[in-house]
Image (cartoon, rainbow, N blue to C red; front, side, top):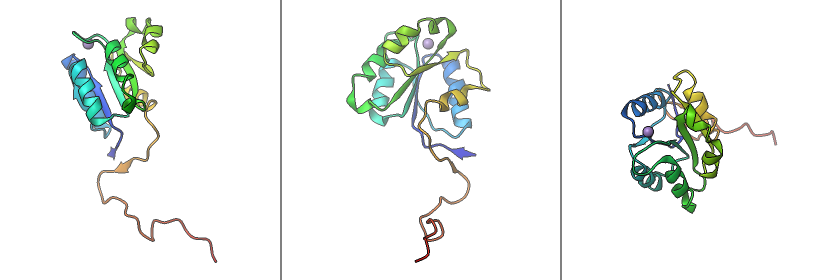
Length: 149
Ligand code: MN
């Protein structure tokens, strides 16, 4: 299995959706942080500085629009990408999603076959490593061949 070092935060109030999203991410080598409310999501974002937040829109007390707007207010989270994970009907509100500072969206219901591919579109390119076996160590064997002098 490939291990990813991308930091992903999932903010989702629905237990079933959270279970599915977390399962899919873990099955593909991610170790997501999980928040079940907007307030917890902001706290975890500030603590972990994720590269990507997968953010539900419809949540009680603080919805995804407000979470995104608040996250965008923190300079230390300027590099964090925010992706709405939301029902098709809400995607009709695309201008509002963009205005709130989202970088894009993934439609619900989640398609398990396509989900990870959609997530990876929003992650910076990285080199995945094998979890089994030793980590590559810097050594003469791994350095680039030198040109003959
Ligand atoms: Mn919800």
